[in-house]
Image (cartoon, rainbow, N blue to C red):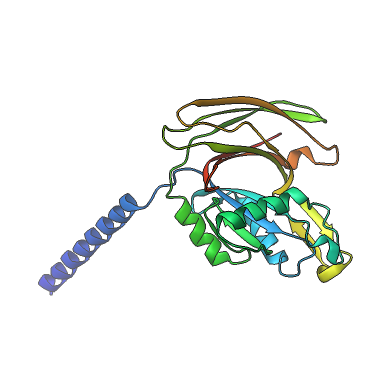
Length: 260
């Protein structure tokens, strides 16, 4: 009886050792995040299939992370739905233009909503949680250029930012964009496909400014001032900087910071 108990104890200890070794091995080989992942949603309040995608972006924006990966969210409201019954107050032709640029880079001749683009490299229907999760986790394995984004002075009318980063030699030129996003926004839709619905938004792009392009092998330093609308709530505003490959539109660096 004692011998049987001894054998059982030894088996349990061996099993515990194997389990501990397995966990340690898994932890050691788990991929580490190498920079924030940028998630962009092209959406419209006039599109009946968009609210679930808006909810997903709001969730990603609110959490700021997905399974340990930093997520930078941007909601671009396009204007081509505005003529179909409801004018989206956040829409802008420039947002549609950005989506069309992505369509060109993806080799597509059409745009649609809701469309989600992750790191400028992959696109899919923006309400697909599983595709979003997979794309974000895959993108986190790609190293990015560290970007330093700092807020200078802030007033009711404007905010200043200081930007600093360096592109590695041989990487080519890059576009640099600075956006102001606002979260915590709610709209009661009075017409169109979403008539009678209340839609909540996160990370809505309020304004965007294209900065000077960046060149490989050089330190990039720039200070810029952006005008603010008094109707925007300062506590819900963030500055977002995007560094994108000029040819492929792939995001190679990004940062975000709260204004207050």
